[in-house]
Image: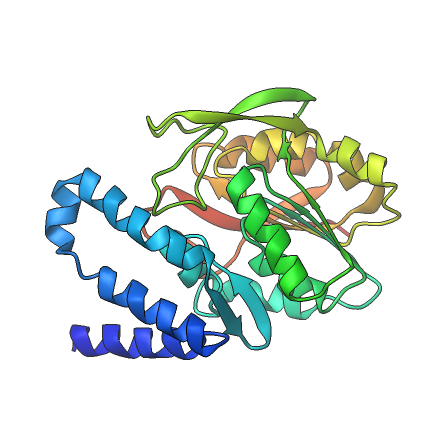
Length: 279
């Protein structure tokens, strides 16, 4: 049954290839994946080798999900862009309208940026990791959107340069300003969201999604003026270690946090929270 499920999943994925070439690339990725999983778990160097073999193929492959085109970066990104990933967030994006402005903090390769760009007036996508950012730019271009401003920045509570710790090659959505994976780091520019939006002269903000791998408290501290001025709705991924101080900060700004049903991470290290302005 498990094998049948895997085959059906990959049949679906290969079928989403945007062209015959993309479908062939996805099939090649599928054939590389079966390097013995248990052996890979016991030998991280084999996992890294497997990802190095697949990464060049991902970067040349485009996926078509309900008319949205996505270039990929790793196995996780292939899962992330499908509708099966974080289905509990979909209603928030379905509610966006043509006069609204969405800010995507921690945009990764642009799943929610692309979704929002088809629905609203302006999207500001912020992604600190250079390679993720290049794929994000390409995905915006692939879809022909001109209402997206993409920035290669980290969000923080002050202007500075800061190390962005590199996650394992099969978890490229998890590079972090807070967690050191022991794989080195890249130095990135960081700014408060308040300054970013002031520099762009943004007239309003309706929805902010924050997914910053543990740096949500610092990101929110750098967003206080924006929250007070525009009272946007928030979707925030909050680490359990940060939950108390994030909740307190938002409460002081007139917000309450409401856990989004079904959003807990399987490993239990993070949960997603929705913050709603108190009326």
